[in-house]
Amino acid sequence: MRIVFPEGTGCVQTPEDLLPLEKIGSVDFYKTPPKDKADLIARLKDAEVVFLDYSVMDAEVIQRCEKLKFICFLGIGYSNCIDVEAATRKRVTVTYTPDYGATSVAEFTLGMILSLIRHIAFSYHSLQKGEWETIRFQGRELHGKILGVVGLGAIGTEVARLGAGIGMKVVGWTRNARPERAKHGLRLVSLEELFSSADVIAIHLAYNAQTERLVSRSLLSRMKPSAYFINTARAKIVDVQALAALLKEGKIAGAALDVHEEEPFPKDYLFRSLPNVLITPHIGYNTREAGLNMLRIAIATLEAFLRGEKLHVVNPA
Image 1 (cartoon, rainbow, N blue to C red):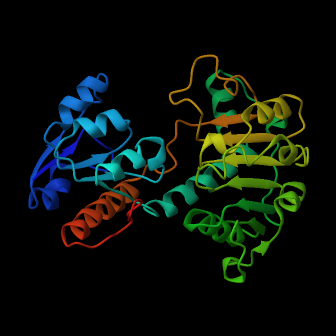
Image 2: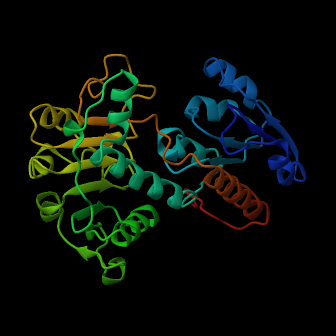
């Protein structure tokens, strides 16, 4: 069995990490991205199993992979990279790796909140320029403030726990608002109430057709001028043009964004020059622990497939 990582992945950090797969078949691990689609197809020739990080396997690529039986997307947003319908037509099983980095992303979110509200990153850059300012960097305490969590999956629930742990009052919204989702003292509310009342809003939704631009101009306009907006989920969940406009106008105090519509973002990126916005290069998930967990889940999906079982399969039909 030929197993291929066509563009490498951060979750494989040592050769020993691949040993469980080498017991299953031959492993081809490419360390650099393919140059183009033709190069991707060449790398996947004769592959039966593909562990995909961020390359796009559209209908053409899938059709050209004659021996392909199984694709595991290393992450959550498989629909952005894999034509699942084309894979299903070719009878290729597609899996993904949910909940691999809930702790990592949640801790990063808390770090973003603290850095933004206490001006940690901004004051550092000021010092690097030879400045010494204190009054401009007056922050706010989080204790007693309202944290609004949008999306209560594994990450959102962990963010709620961390927020409650430092004394924040937590409100949350989920499409499946069952009583058992209200953990860690969280109170379930409508999206409108959450955006109107929260001092800090953190987005933790999966991106799909139902959540695209869910965070609309109307919702963002409900935010208090003193409130902060955090997004470590996906940029397309948010009306980013509206968010940028409200930040420029001072109608929202600030934002911290780890995800962007175009990655890497262009030089003229609309958030790059805003003084009240903290941006990072999509690293919320990026810890050694999360990487090992992602690879463990990915290997488990393949092992289940080989036993005739289904684990995290997105096209079970």
